[in-house]
Length: 159
Image (cartoon, rainbow, N blue to C red; front, side, top):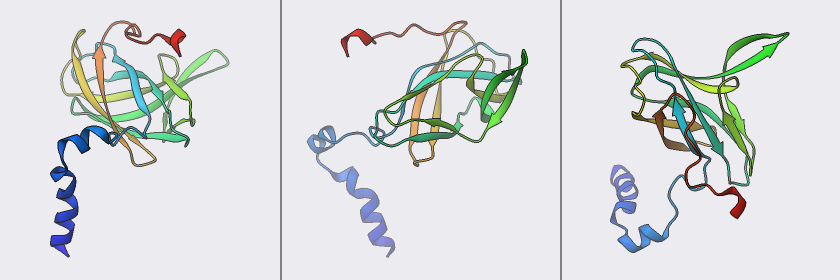
C-alpha cells in the first residue's frame, strides 16, 4: 500500500517536460490575488494586507485563511461603519463570487498580520499563501508600500 502511494505521489514529477508545460497549473481553477500590498509597520505590531481576489471559475469560493512567515498569525478582518463609528471584526471567511471579485482595501476587508516578526519596510516584498474553502492554496507576493500600487499591465479596456 505504501509503495502505491509513493508511485502516485512521484508520478507527476516523472511526466515529460512538454506535458507539464501544456497542463494548467494547480491554481488555474482557483481565485488569484492581484495588486497585493501592505503598509509599512513596526516589528511586534500588526500589519494590514490588501489585494483584489479574482475568481474566474464557474464556482464561488471563499478565502478561509492565510499563512506567512513574517507574522505569528494571519487573520481575515472587515472594517464596518455603524452610526459613524468604525469597528473591525475578525471574519471566518470572505466569499468570492463565481466569475467575480472581492477587493480587500483600507476601510473594508483586509488581512491582519499579527505579531510581526520583523518590521515591514517600504519597497520590500513578502510571500503569503491564501487558503480557500475549495482546498486551493494560492501563493501571493505582497509589496510593502505607503499607497496601493498602480495596476501595472492591466488594460481593462482591451477585454
